Image (cartoon, rainbow, N blue to C red):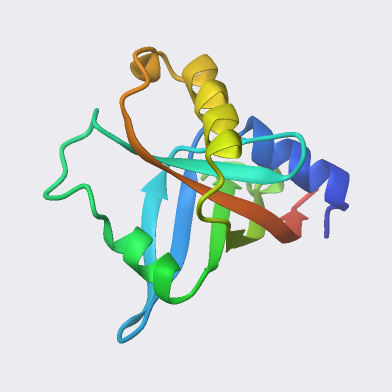
Amino acid sequence: MRLDEAEARARLAAHDHGVLCTVHPERGVDAVPVVFAIHPDGFVGVPVDLVKPKASLQLQRERNLAADPRATLLVDHWNRDDWSQLWWVRAKLEWCPDDPRRADELADLLVARYPQYADRPFANMLVMRIVGITAWSAR
């Protein structure tokens, strides 16, 4: 059953992690698990943080977005024993580089949501605007 946009946005905003998909110019879709924050005006912030170890702070997802600003954020709920509880939300995103005010607002939301970010350990904030949303639920 398709969910309406308001319900889809509510489920997306309530979820604590998802899968960010960007487009690699040679191998196609790059999918990585991420945490995120949703601003009420429809912008999504995905942090590049200093909390989790990384080989480099210039992540492939950033290079992908620089080459193609389209992305998708997918969240889902799974219950192996009760498939009537299954649902997913897919947000179509467009990268919005160079928006420091919005990046700061999204960083504030992440700090409020995740104790690991209390010290604002952000090397960068990927700011994206929701340009479309699709959702489905078994109920």
